[in-house]
Image (cartoon, rainbow, N blue to C red):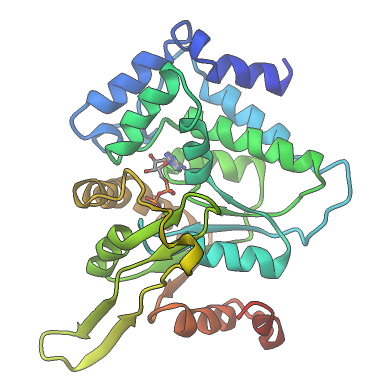
Length: 307
Ligand SMILES: Nc1ncnc2c1ncn2[C@@H]1O[C@H](COP(=O)(O)OP(=O)(O)O)[C@@H](O)[C@H]1O
């Protein structure tokens, strides 16, 4: 079956009921701790009618080499890290630097949510409560994005927000050789403040942060201070700022809890395979970016291109 047809079958609100996807989503949402309460390693509950093998086969197909020449180098990098750590910021900078696309599954989910229909309203419930969406769903969304990129000649990519469960990591490992996994780390109090301070321009989509983070080093103040100044919008974006519906304190705390339960094991998955690069962010972009480039052995001259 053509990928587009298969995706239509998976996503169309009209067929959602037939596929029992609605009940799958409702089950995931209504279980008290959603995905994190699952005793299975498969993340959010699985529906027998939406075969994860089918989603994995789709991912494999979309990960095969592009028929048109690659525009960038063939990097297959992954960014891991808690909500608010800055995966999007650094993945996007590296994407510009290396000439490979930055693919953020959170953005793919939000695009899907912006469409109307039963399925999107049920997905919205999951996302707005800080839960993960089902593995099959996210894999199919990613396949669709990779397939579109393949047609444009993309080959490598920097993934941000995927994989988020061990099942997703296993499936990805089965179809592509991930070269490097960058695990970004930041103190938990900074993570919550950064999520709450996040603002997006509803017109141009640029990301800003109004939080000013200043954390003293330890109880006796002897450790290194962590200072992250706000990233304020220019005057033309100021009146158009919006906040993500899942960036409330309650939901951010739930997202952190889900991260520790479901995504932290993914760190171990890659650590065991020798692919994990741990990177503790020392502060804001001016301090962290050059350090990250050094950790990645990327030349200094490239840094000036987007400093
Ligand atoms: N790989 C994934 N698996 C399951 N759900 C995902 C995945 N990626 C994104 N999502 C959904 O989209 C939401 C937003 O993702 P993202 O923008 O990456 O948020 P965060 O700031 O928490 O890292 C997640 O809370 C989750 O509901």
